[in-house]
Image (cartoon, rainbow, N blue to C red; front, side, top):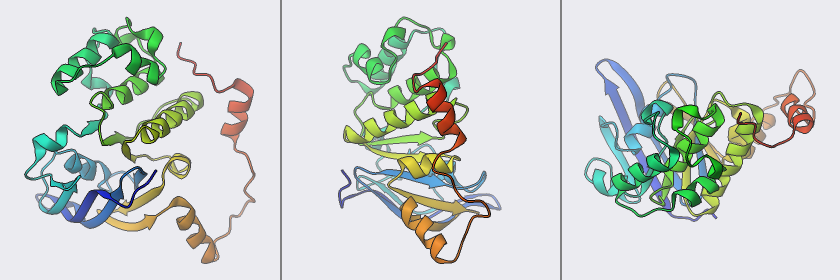
Length: 255
């Protein structure tokens, strides 16, 4: 459930690389219990903004507060309350999933039940499988599993479903919702607008380093329609992806 408490506060954030301004004076808040999507074309500043929130990149000016703590001063405390999705290259390919989870648990200094974590992402039967032998969808789900090891207040997901087939993509949507339902706030980026529309309580759209829209997906769509926007082609009540899922089923095909 979304609360009225701000868990992420971005105030006049600027990030420059020499003469390039990647993030140009943006401000927005994220509330506890919501799934918030940061959307924009390549080079818009999405990943840079996420990395500043994750304490992985220094800001040039402005302020970012994570659960009331400034990222410039409280990096160690912030790292304890967030979960960050790693890219697949961030995992030792020859270790089993159980070994990898125990490794990450050691970094967080927490006790875990690897089987329970793997079960929560549909990978219980793969506990002895080495990472490199997983399918693409399994690797993405395992990457998400590593974000919840420390039971974080905030989970950061950067394009979590890129490259997945329709079944794997929709199953990952359900996993993301379950993470939110378990009490974590989810901050994600995606290039799939249908994904943002299905998952996100609110979205911020950025372009050229600036926030150009901020609202719920439904409100943004309604605002566009109020301006007289119409499709050249009547929108059907189902998509080709719906047809695909209907014909092939929702079960994950990991082999």
